[in-house]
Length: 133
Image (cartoon, rainbow, N blue to C red):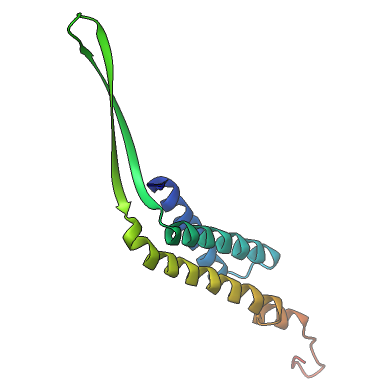
């Protein structure tokens, strides 16, 4: 059963969402393209891992020491896995992350091919009567 650690999963979701929302709120020029590509890669990676069947889980290993029958100290290891997102729930979430990745691609191409109004306003010239062309 392959797993992704919960901390890595949450970190990737937080970074991807923050980059996506940050570029929606602020116009950053070239940096917004980089943030959108990075957000796309993070969401696509999450979508692939979840649809393939990976679990999102936390693994904890506890080591205890005990005495055996010869009165010598023996280390006992106990590993527990707490599943945050099971592989059966992962395909639905994988498609949601795939949709977020495609949303970033649409925003990327919209800004690249002239959909950004701030860049269009910066390229306009003032006419003598105060109007912009």
